[in-house]
Image (cartoon, rainbow, N blue to C red; front, side, top):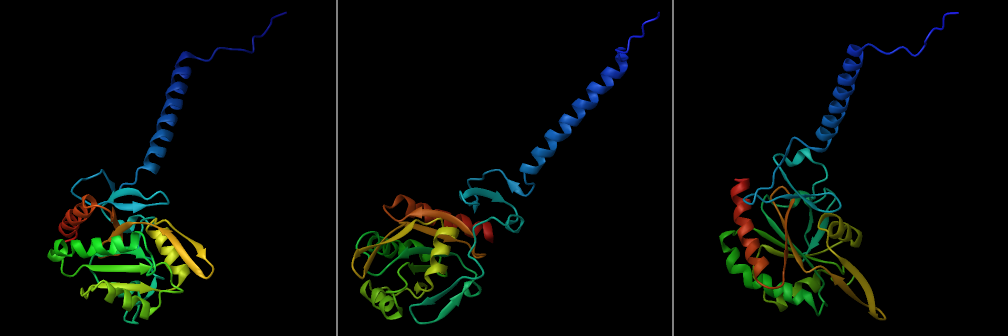
Length: 239
């Protein structure tokens, strides 16, 4: 009886073709994933250009067109505050200029006076940017009413018309501080009916399109000088 061998060897040519086909598929899959993670609009880091900030980790991103990345940190369209003058502003009222944003509260006895005094000290350095806006936003909206903000401004003898103090909805301010700026801020009761806040000491730079472009420590002078240098870069970049 003739025994038929069912385990026939495949022709060598077929084996080679099959191998190259599998290799081609693997290369295609690899290139597909690489293409998925590399956004064509992103650019390599450039020390002469300020980055944008993206995602929950505030990763710096250099990108040609910020509209290509919906995760960039930007002042939200729902942003509304009340100025020390009593005027209500929204994100649409942000003039097409750069903004420096800091967080404070009027009864603060720690970092807030230091931040305010440091901004006063760097005002001469900001004279080459006469249209820049400074926004000091209270994180104690319940107590920091318009009259309180006016008194605070008078206490520090602030004459700069472009430096405004704001109060507003606690939820709006907290969402902006934590979500857009990545600012740390926590409230606690020091005494019955009195609240203290642990909050960021940083200054946040926004460009004329309301995108976050820089974060700086208010303490010392090193970061303050870097802020001035970055403003020059930003003006050159945006013009």
